Image (cartoon, rainbow, N blue to C red; front, top):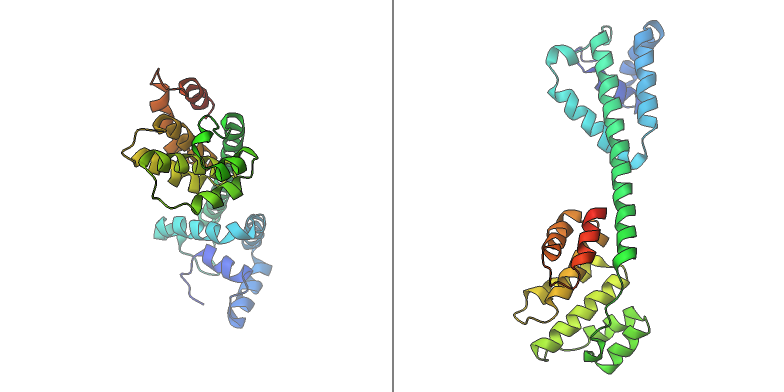
Length: 247
């Protein structure tokens, strides 16, 4: 067994049952004699065992990254020479990363909850100009059959004038949002905003921002909402101000 193998790698290989028969025998003999080594191995098993399998690989990789950046004098160890400094460093590395994962999990959970709450509070499918849609699409849309409305809209050819195309895109984006598919909704609203026709611009800004909120992309939603909130003539100015305060 290499005499300069890091203690973390050595313990990891033992826990993962990756030591050779000879290495395992030497390590287990040392476990019987070295209380510090037993405690360190036990702590490693506890820390790693508490991590979900989906996060375990990421945790190990992060520990190894920190381990690789540490001074060689701190991380070099032989089977028969586990320094207290090295032992404590492994505990702190593992503990800090576990704490980071817990905080990260809470952060993303909180972001997801906030996204769902804001979307539920401020989204309602637009119906102000629904009469501009074809009778078939309008009928499905009004009944709340949004999947059928999207299917009907997708079957239409882009042979209409710019206003009709913008109308179809705008309401298709609304239908996608109602179906909780913000990524496809984003595509629709962005196309409306990029078109040379000026119709549905302000409405599409608002719904594009809500699409980003639903997709948990707050960084992209925020500048759009700020732009809306700064425009006193925008029909969604007050709503944008409220969402910004709650984000």
